[in-house]
Image 1 (spheres, rainbow, N blue to C red):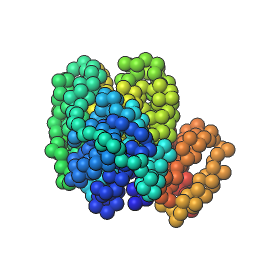
Image 2 (cartoon, rainbow, N blue to C red):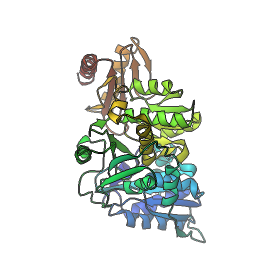
Image 3 (cartoon, rainbow, N blue to C red):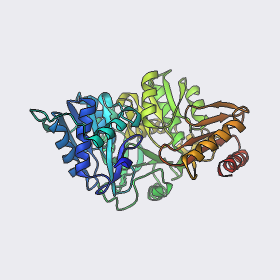
Image 4 (tube, rainbow, N blue to C red):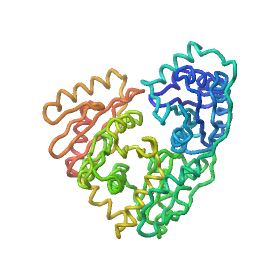
Length: 445
């Protein structure tokens, strides 16, 4: 059971690692830990999500908490509901982009503040293991239903400021993205739907836009012509991948730069975060449009905390998460798409031409290297620190980052396995390849 309690959520294979009995205990531990009284609970379309909701509701109400059943929804809607309904906690039953055999829970406090391993998941794990739950309430809590989907769509729609109509293709991957796309209705955005029928077996392809092979059908649709861009949603629709009007994949940090431009138009001078794996061009774009660029470490719990501390209006992560202060400092994939549509509609030029000047550096992409143990990964990090730390501007916001005049790299250890992750960027393709191979030689030597 210990393996299901992750750094940012609870997740495992349904039927063996995640069962109704375990989820009922997690619910009791959640209420014991938080002392919460009103919990908004949403779920994705996985085959097991309905019975896991019933199990969670049974455990939570046993301890006197009221459960608000959001029904099927996207994860961004569950964050919106947390604040909208005045709840002091929320839970999303989902395994996000993982294959169909998985399920899990994303946990939040009031105002959609995430609970991570360091801020509660480890405590909940301990309570479950010890079965040190609070006693059953004399009066059990209630289960009621609420549908905030229309309110959420109207909220997101209010950010649409299109100068002319935009046509997009959306690959929903049989997940929850169709709930996000309701925000496009009533705007000058028209869309063609691919795999829009929710199906927890994900019969067409994995719901994970980080795997570029899952974008093939979206690329083919856009290349038929007549589209301004395409959007692919992951299983619970808290992440989005984009392709331009030619069907070419746009790196997710380039979308961060574009969305930042639109958010700064609406919020002049605001602070905007980008994760430390992002291109130099993201920081430069934010500065060019009058914003205050701020670097964040990787992981939604860290980013959301930093956003709150700096009162930032937006943050983008290389993994396709786009965070908005307006949505309780949480993700909204449909709002990211609307911001891109706003820019395309005003620009008078295609998205590929808008991206081209931002995509001015050369990135390695994230390269993972598996080592024998976590100790080996730490030793590699120490070697890189000794060899490069004094040569450039080094900092350790998340792993080791070193910046030089014409290139930079970041190396991080995985939280859960003996992996080293390398991201590197340079001003020329030749230097990127040379420095990438140089760093990898140290890592793998």
